[in-house]
Image (cartoon, rainbow, N blue to C red; front, side):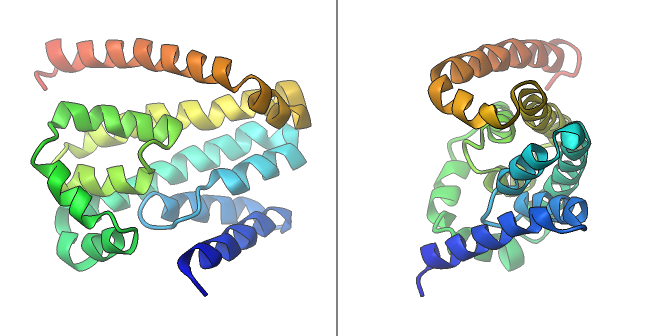
Length: 206
């Protein structure tokens, strides 16, 4: 069985966790490990759970945000202190090690902060890659955690708002209006990043 088939089975298993009585705990666990090494994004569990129980959407968003940040901090520590023993095997598994090594010589810390934000908000690049990279590149932990909190919180709470407002129609809405959703997201990113960059530049001397 190849890697794609294994990941598909893992994705189906992850989705099935949403129907369990312990779904909230599983949600926290999945988004936690996703931030370091798990190949399946937490959204595949978070969104179905929120659609199934719309009144709990914000509660699930809180769990997902907190656990994602904690998992990201674990990933940061792995990148900073266990690069060869843990981070490298993870990167090699995803066939990203050579790319990762090449990127280290070309990316600045400020550019990496942008990547962390984009990763947390849009999953571009995958969040597990940026958490490991942030630790390996000596991004200050507080800066990494703050950037991740803003981006991940915005993503999860935005989905919670959509689900409470549109219910099960949210998936149809996103699929039909994805250009406007993306456009709005990019505008929001530009505004938040502009403010964030100003704080970093003029007050924190980053």
